[in-house]
Image (cartoon, rainbow, N blue to C red; front, top):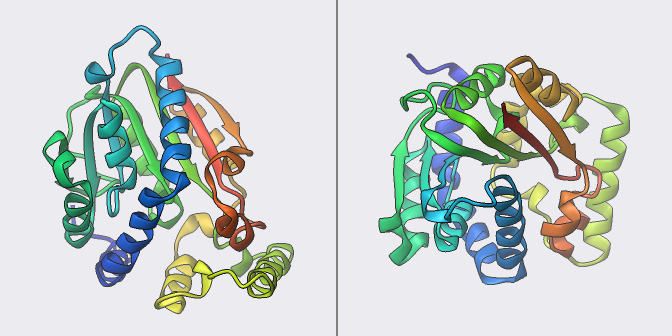
Length: 258
């Protein structure tokens, strides 16, 4: 499948950002977020498969980036496969994983066109990915396709760029910038080539829609039993993230395949 122009743009942008994004992931791995996120992921997965040994639970992370989730999942003992569109990100992920890299099956792959067979995984998981896909409904269909019966889908995301389209969201975004500056916190929303990311956000379909309502509708239509958690950010974010992104809280969309 030939790449969509947005996919090409994403590939170029995230290739340029691979090193700095990896540094951000290294920060997560070195502070309390590592244990907070690990506890969250294990609680979700083990709750769905309480009688299955972790080494038998096949987990696919879509859009691994520099490998944060893949590392935590492998460290916890799950059988992990991780994909990303960007070779530079995969290189960073392997380096960040260190000795755990041999326990993670890394693949360069488009999230909207998986090459895995049907029902290949017990868990499909992603973070901060769906919003910037050109065909997110196609990606969701692919993720459901490779999910085995009884499988679990975990998608962590937010309405990151709603401020580009909605006045209320714009006011919240500007308030977050002021609060971050007032408290002397670094602000991830004014970082490297951020204008390029905003341009991409203008062009993708999910920036202007209401989520997670969109996710619930799409995944329910694909046959999953779906629920959402709008408070997950309280359990996994640190003070800086809670300040930087107060108006765009992280949510969890959880789907179960009957």
